[in-house]
Length: 331
Ligand code: PMV
Image (tube, rainbow, N blue to C red; front, side, top):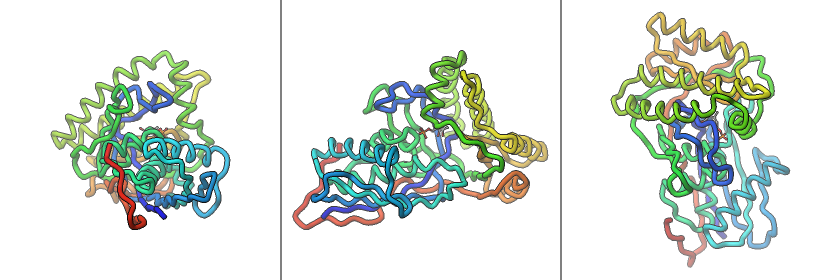
């Protein structure tokens, strides 16, 4: 019997991914950059089942059905294709992120699944190949494969679109789970709508490519202030292009906007605080280890807070392979 258990964490983009150049391969229209978190792990075990004729998926102790199961099976089909296998698998996944935190678990989920499934099916993928595989489950998952800080190179095909680690100063994110959240349009649907209807979409694509280059330079220079400034302006640009879709999509709630204002007020007092938000009302404030408590205290008026820092990429926790079986070749 082959079984493997892997763990991965969510990531928060400081330069955002919004828009696909290829929906099937999940190639983005521009590159992005993120921090992999040291909290809210997903731990996933994949066990091959020679007797089964269907895959099964248990998420947080309950059998998954519908879209969640279909997405997992589709992903496993891709792993089977790489491994040249027809065996079905049982997937058991536990998410530490409280649902209310609104942290997209798809990134940690597909990064952990990519590693556990590839090992269970006998593949030994290097980090780049693993990142490419995770990307097929959910675009942002390719960044969760990588330790601490990652750049996702947009690329032009399956081989060239992957995430890679970069060095950056040690920063913290204060995650604010705000009150008064409304139901969000999924990132998949939101991206499609922006691409199809926003008059600003072309400018978003070209400016994001430039912003990423600037962010990479700021990281290499070890310039936290510039990293913070780029983070906030790029997040607001993403929300602006999204809001310019038809029918419009607005992810930020009044309490989310209030966090941006509180962070700006802190900055005026010399505190390091730059705000970002993904496709939902929750907000993250980028800060330094020294200022994290002060920021958390100030923004706690708008929701519940948690301080997180850079964490590990996807890693193997456990693996059992029957004697006599050998590993696949790295691709
Ligand atoms: O990978 P997806 O489909 O969950 O999209 C992620 C989109 C954002 O979180 C809004 C931005 C990002 O780069 O993570």
